[in-house]
Length: 284
Ligand code: HBI
Ligand code: FE
Image (cartoon, rainbow, N blue to C red; front, top):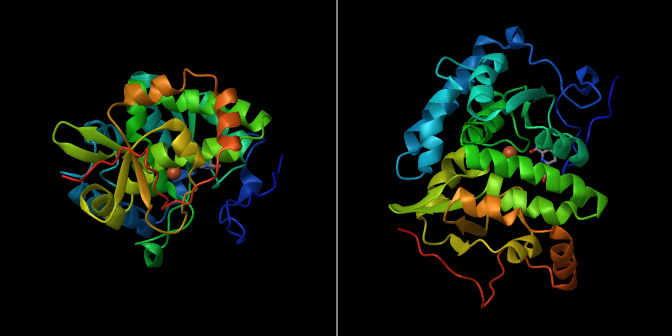
């Protein structure tokens, strides 16, 4: 059954993917044979550039899991990744034509199925792309799904998202996604490191978010995070820091209903807002 393409965020451009190939849950075949040598070369160049930046900037859990992706020779077959991923944490990745509607997205996560866009950017878009492509999703998001605690957090997020959708709180919960799964930082014994996919898949932001004194880093507080708008087309003004993935998972134990009510009763904050109650973390 053909499905309507979804318009994501503020972008009014029609999404790039071919949604006519998608099933009713928005998944489609990866169709690995259609990737061109240029596609695999772009993936390998992106992988080489980001891999060189991981030491001192990426979370240990990410660095440990990255080899499980098996992506050294180019865009991996999702079936190959899934054999390893299912064995590790019971997750699987599924191909999608691109961004999909919120509820379909939450349902896939709740079912331990992570949607991975099946197309890759053009060489001209090497340094920046608005919509997530296969490199952002596969390199940025999939390695940490091999970490049992983080994998459970993402599923809990999906389950919470289905409820949030019913409560009309999807936007509030999307801020938690944005400031953890996409742009989260973790405090390790040897310093601040990135675990968010949006940071890990970006050359500039991976260094900026971890070491630049201009970046603002505050300890993650759930309600502060849900009150805070985010930027889609620039480095984040504020990064939220955790001490462990257990801390993320434990957040999801609460009933978010009353939290949404308190957040709605509070003033929304701009991405660059500061609050006296913020627990500021200095770099290094
Ligand atoms: N669709 N394929 C895909 N990938 C995402 O990361 C994604 C999405 N749809 C919606 C969405 N993210 C965000 O709005 C989430 O916060 C729900
Ligand atoms: Fe993402």
